[in-house]
Image 1 (cartoon, rainbow over the protein chains, first blue to last red):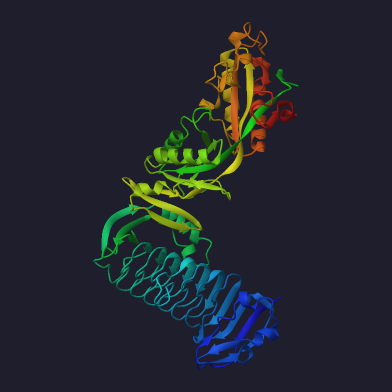
Image 2 (tube, rainbow over the protein chains, first blue to last red):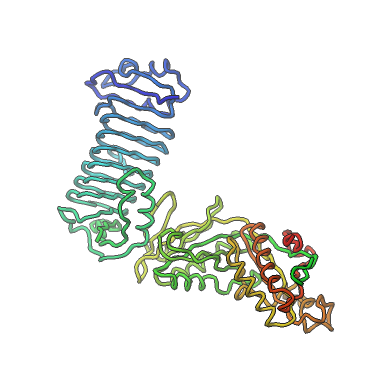
Length: 271
Length: 298
């Protein structure tokens, strides 16, 4: 069996809702059935085979080739199997993902891993704003799983994040961990302004002090050796990421905040 | 059966079902990991009065522990899951949480779990922090020397308590030397503990007593000073009897430990005053697990 492959054959002018093309929804469907699925494009819809060339037969292993940033909602609600994407993708990649795996070779749009529950998303590129966040008007962002971004993330990474881990090998934008409820965000590069704004609980782990400094809403708790950090780094070792080879450290400067709120969040900076 | 001049009685040791778990205690160095483990497993020789039976299973190299620090693995056994949970919680709270630089982890995975740090976290008075790492929840509890890290739960499995054998010797010193040699070898076996002081018990008991308040009393048949007063099981040459009690995660683990221990005693042999190996056999009153000495040594 070979991966069920969707090769984009058109230059999409409108956004395409790809949420019907998941391992769960395509299981036990023939290629003819899949070809006949109607995808919402803008304010109309089109058959899958009018947009993609189909090949392969393994619906547990889906590939998107020639993908563009017009393809939204890839992997929505997916609970098993894997989606691999060659090219950029649009918004809401892995929305409500639960236990499945997505890998992108390219950049992603806004709301990547939005309200993700479990599983893993790896982005070999940059991610847009609101990685791991909650949908507008909702209060809980991702509640589990791991997101790996080899490049940079946009603004408001981990907004309203509830649980889970976001690992950023590059830089994170402004308002990272804003309104974060819990979970872990680790950044190997720099972090933008207003880090942890409105943060309630959770951990931001940094290898360097942000170039813009930390806000007055975080209080310095001093330098410490924290026993959980070796366990955390150990859990990274199985990942296909720079984090797997980062030298484990447990010595950190601890800042607690946002003290404008309940102040139970923490920013840990390697020392 | 005779091994190196030592008679192996045609009898069996009687053991009973327990619930057990393994915990891993780590600390800044091996000394403090051991202090914490010894404190936890103190006053845990017998469920008769201690609530649980516990002991140190193994000293762990930093490469064997979850946080990469020196550690000690301990085994705890109790008569049921609830009593085990109670003992684990109180001993963890009073003996590990309080011990400088310590951290506490589960050393046993099982579908059945009991609380480890789940309730200890409240000591943090709201400042405790939860961390989910690799699907397991940990609690970081702020304490005066830094943070106490503990796993939320530990696994529990059906286990076996009360495996045993008796060493019958010509003198007290010879019985003790033989038991010491046996315990040294048995401590190399995984998944077992010998919960009594130094692994040896000199006051083996029988089930029941003439006094209504007691469930157990001295095993008079093996008390050398009572040879002329009771229905003794001792020959005139035997002047001292000591017992090694073994608790294990499985019956097979106890089988292995008993074989290793009895062999170590027999290696000293009759030349060192060892006359017989027997076992605590209570006629089926104590428990369903029977360890036949001659089968184990066959």
